[in-house]
Length: 385
Ligand SMILES: Cc1ncc(COP(=O)(O)O)c(C=O)c1O
Image (tube, rainbow, N blue to C red; front, side, top):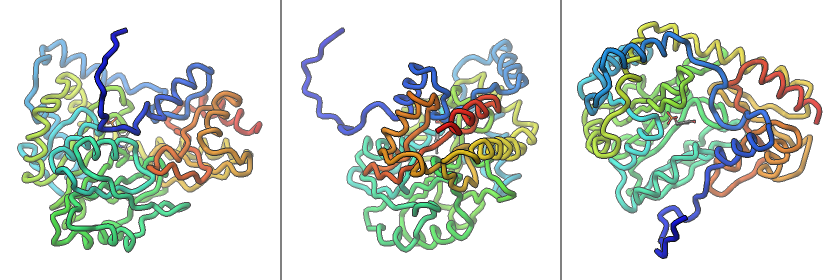
């Protein structure tokens, strides 16, 4: 151990280890089923590994271009055009990133100056607020209204000030599984019209939308697309969260600013994995069938919990299922999640962890990106309480 005598004035004084790490560690310690952290417990297809290994063996192991390998940027451009009807030029409108988290951080660092305000919707994915604060910005919290978790656009409008630099939206939404509709994007477009506000749209679950709904991408919104950066993640789409590869698309003027930071932040992203993904993406059915794949898991898991005392909230997209537990316990959600992990053997995330003020509606989040055997084993335990 090396002791430091420095009196550190932390930029993130209230930030500790994230709840995801805490709950995953507890799950391991207790031998609990881990429905807490958002990652699959099943493998990606061997074709993806074969393509990646072939790239390694053929010598594609050195720094790629700062913006991403051309094959992958071209494949992203084609995919986005096919899905959302808008063509981003791989040359200056698409950048490959080290996962979505880095894309989000870099976007904030590129646009937010000290004292600028960034509107985020609570509950919010946990990286947004610390990233805003690290770059000197101030997070301003709008609310996704419980229990439907829909935005109240009049309330959002009241939060906009001359200091508002960015608005972050996320659909399909983690942790709630709610979706933004085209009408929401219209409201957002109206709200940001004739302002300098940049929209940062986190669409990492873009392919996981249920019950026949269409993903309303900001990229597909002709007006919003002109002032937005759209972020996605191959980790979520191809069951490879540990590879940490994602991308950002946007108009050249915005992506140009993004790249100025990106090149001194990560500079480049793992070459053979980019080539493997580019090769694998050629078959569009691999991302197009993801919705049906996860819809089946959602229905399977909901069915497992039907005879339990959990009250399941709607899940329209993503791979997260929220549940109220008031019928089981009056404990605060953090206590309940720990109790569930220790005593019942199923790890979950308390939803208060996604609120800056730790608001507690007695709701927990289950991740159903798991094998049916795991979901069935969890269901069996959860029906007993
Ligand atoms: C809403 C949201 N955004 C971003 C990410 C991070 O994606 P990546 O692993 O590609 O950094 C996650 C991962 O859980 C997420 O849920």
